[in-house]
Length: 468
Image (cartoon, rainbow, N blue to C red; front, side, top):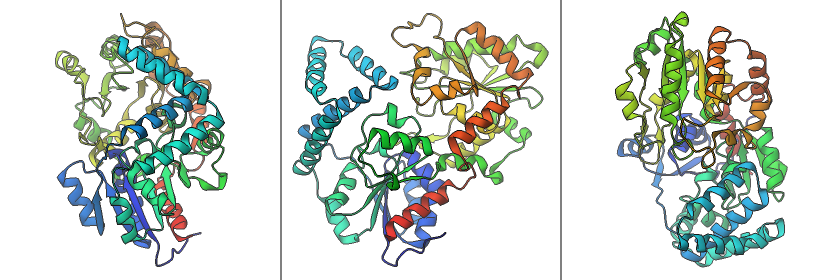
């Protein structure tokens, strides 16, 4: 049932990251909000053209700028995040703890790390975390660096302040907590499926939460038992809505023309990961290209590499220059605030539609391949010569969010390069072999939210909350 918001409903939407612009501007979610309520947008500014486009669509657009917190607040948040991770102690939390230990590679850094651990460990329990959080909230107010948002909200009198990405809230926290101090309801969107078990404590706590699916809702309530279940709304995520917009679909010939591929030959997608988490990945990519070149009876298949859009290291440039048989279409993101473009949304959707199989290291792309019923293979072995103790690729498949994907049988994990060669051929010869498992995984994870309308559900929940 559509809610008719009150005339005085006024939503302030905060977009603290480029992906939030994709999720809520490019999807049309905030267009729906604007049509039914007053809307003020507070957004990061990736470039001049983006801000001009926003100003042409919305009546009030305010640039979001980061205010560096004072030291007492920063140290309290650091300790609270450490205590939260140690209490949660998920596989990802253990890995983060190990990496922070490894990064303390000088005597001074080790001393600081030891000191923080000594202080936080007694608080690594529910009661201790609650105490630290109360201290952090009071310190945030006592040591606040600005009253600009309090002044702004007194003028605007919003009925709801919405943060489009909880995990990127450091740049948004001044605005969010100013709303809370004034008694204005706050809401946030849990940005991704791995964030609750992999990305640390939610700062600050909110009144309402929007999540991808029922499993994330359950996790959120388990980890934060103070959150009321009726304050968590399953909307799906607008980032997948683009995949179900048939008006953006290209023919295979159109797609292949754009990426330089031969439409008559199979295409395998390799989606790269974060360079600090997957060092040496160019070696794996080249090895897979060699596997495919040896499958002459199948085409041979072509390798298309989608470099992680946030990777600005240039680590694939040498391989791209040396191996003309590997396709490297550009990921079209604006570097500032890591902002996806609408062109890249279409490119990703059509890539998923037209590839014959996909390979990655424990990525969300696995889910997206399953949405299109494409074989998804995962790399569980380290690149040649890469220390498996320092960065073990296999460990990522023990993470709480990804382990059920592996257990579902919807994806295959190759634990050796030899297994990858065999799995890759099998996937191309018999692409429907795990189709039932893929479909079952997607049904279990997303229910009926993969309909291209998550942006509408988000807008409807925001309008409902603003009208309460």
